[in-house]
Length: 179
Image (tube, rainbow, N blue to C red; front, top):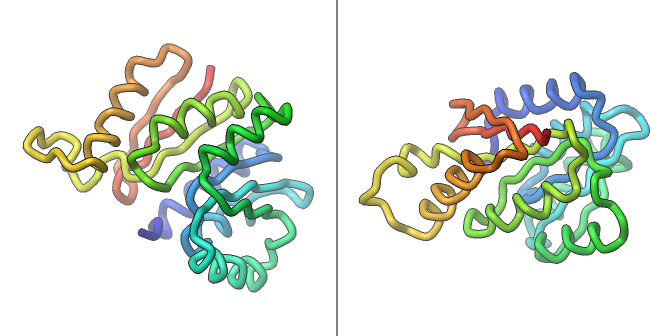
């Protein structure tokens, strides 16, 4: 469930390259990806980290402190769909530079539309696990996670609001550039 070190380094590189000030993470787990992102943010940068699991995020909070990035991260516990919708309702549309989504696969399509609203033009959204161990191209695999990722991949390909690049890093990392 953890991203690879190569993926973490690459994501941090992108954050630095883009001069990201505000980022969103959907799915924290034990906080490694948060550390990769927050370390790359400038001193005044902020990461809004969304997760539903208090037990796993306790581990994340501990490691954020050890990494010296806890002050850059705002953890919001609760369903990401609600958190992202609340950010939109409070006027945050178009105010984020970067998003990383690595959460429950069945809601990837929902997260995509919400994050698209929050990301500024020229911003970047990254989706993890878009190759899904090759299952996405095997039509005989029909579990809900595989179907959801397959659906997201098709949704992204058809969306003329974005430019795409799918990389074979980790289990597939799709970069979505909002035009």
